[in-house]
Amino acid sequence: MSMWNRFVETMSSLSALNFVYLVSAVLFIFALKRLSSPRTARTGNLLGALGMLLAVIVTLMSQQIISFTWVIVGLVIGTIVGASLALAVKMTAMPQMVGLLNGFGGLASAMVVIWEFYRHRLVGDEHVFAVIAAITSLIGWVTFSGSMVAFAKLQDLLSSRPIQFPLHRVVNVLLMLASVTLVVVVGVYPAYQWVLIVLIVLSLGLGVSLVIPIGGADMPVVISLLNSYSGLAASAAGFLLGNPGLIIAGALVGASGIVLTRLMCKAMNRSLLNVLFGGFGTVAPSEKGEAKTVRRYTLEDVQIAVEEAQEIVIIPGYGLAAAQAQYAVRELADYLEQKGAKVRFAIHPVAGRMPGHMNVLLAEADVPYDHLLDLDAGNREIEHADVVVVVGANDVVNPLALTDKQSPIYGMPIFDVRRVDTVIISKRSLAAGFSGIDNPLFYQDNTMMIFGDSKDTFTSLVSMMKES
Amino acid sequence: MTLIIAITIFVLAMFVGLEIITKVPVLLHTPLMSGSNAISGIILVGAIVGAGAGGTLGAIVGTLAVAAATVNVVGGFAVTDRMLRMFRRKGK
Image (cartoon, rainbow over all chains, first blue to last red):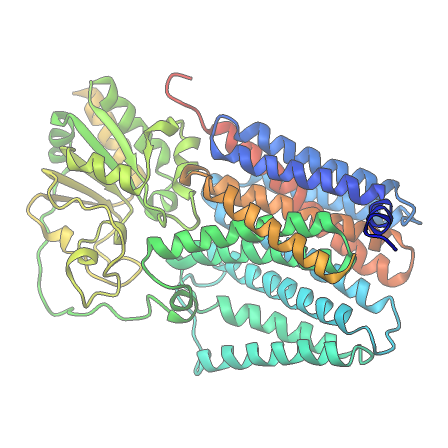
């Protein structure tokens, strides 16, 4: 057969169904491309939804569907649950929401594998099929159980502190080795179909064991990584079903999670392995005996400082989300801007519990997005700011990251506020940050500490300023 | 589809993904995660085939898979839209 004939034969075997899936995949690529600017992002998201609708409709129309009853039951349940979650979730709870969605993605892929694998009576020579099924199953179930643990931690159903049991790292390594071994066993002996069940149980345990020792402040990395896994699970399922559209869409999401994971690790100056195995935040705060004094200030002192300032930079952290202080802080910014000052927000990549968490909260409170600065732009702005207001952040402004080679956070890029005239820090208490590291900034002469709930602090401050 | 073609598609799609995602600004990283979550719900098409094949196994795992993937798709796109509506420039 000539090359040309072979080409024509291959082309005609491309089914109409797969062609539509390709169109969907292209729409997904456009959707992600349009996320490069907030002006085009919304139509991009709609294009993505359109791509999905198209894929679902042609699947429903294909001859593979014999009975619609269960399909409709699943679609109705999923739509009700998904829509109510999306409408009800608070912006502060977005990390939990994404965690939950990651888990459902993994679960769906893992369930599809069960059906694909057990509907055939395998005779023993389907090695490639079996290996792909085993890999998809492993990724899918790890994503599911890991995401459920991450959800429970973010929702405070489990302690957000690292939870470790004796020999935890050894157990993790053994679980991983056992899982990989079972993937090989499934591949070599596809006819022993019960081995996949053992692998499923093991994968569920692995997911729990991997995520449970990771603390709250490392959640941005974990959520990004699980996001990547949920995509890779869908992609692997695409291999299993011979569906190129699924392979492409899953790979895009896998790549997205990888990019975000790398960015988060870089923003903490730690390697992925260090985050996954570090148990960061378990070290007890040291040097407790050393008595350092913090000067306490009143709201009147703060009022004088901010009213005189021309340029103000606000640095939010997870405490802003925990106290739901985004509206109170926005009111402060509005008031100061009306008086002629310039107010900007500097947002660290790992502030909050997921990438971009603070940006969404402040956008919700109606802060224009061109006032939200990233790490570099934020530091440039801080250089000529008169006043910096830190709201519920700690490690991201800790100068030890620049000065103390012994410190666990040494080398992490931070907002350097040491030379600003006045630093106002709104904090619940003097407790050390998540990392358990003391912050010398608190004891500096130009620092004003205001303890208490950030929302109350800024609400009272604004009403005081409006009255005077 | 042979395995090598599937791998080729996967590798090329990964490169496309890395290229476009790198261009998404930090500002939009949360909607990126929820939006890409919705896209990974494409597994729904595999789930529908399972649930619609008519057999007990398909009915059980297929229906569960369809429900889970639909939560992903509907919840993901809807919550992303809700977030993206909030981003505005100064002065609207």
